[in-house]
Amino acid sequence: MRIRRILRPALITAFLLLADTVLAQGCASCYTTAAAGGTQTIHALRNGILVLLVPPALMFTGLMLILRRWQTTPEARQHVPHRNNPVDIENNSQ
Image (cartoon, rainbow, N blue to C red; front, top):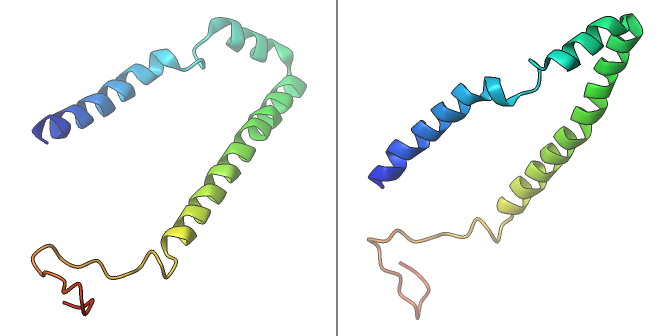
């Protein structure tokens, strides 16, 4: 448990620090091509980013809503007894 407390923040910090070198926004070839293209190229790139971004975001949102609804069904909300309160199996009560 102690390792997880240390490892999780360390990994998050490492990913945040290394994200600048991983992402492709700093690519010189990409930058010069986009800058030399003019307004039509910039407009096309912005539309392309939206086309590539919106469907996965909607799928993720839909999946999260489905999982949330599935989790909150009456079957999922059954009473779970506390570990210190034993359950009487014959009467199915505490």
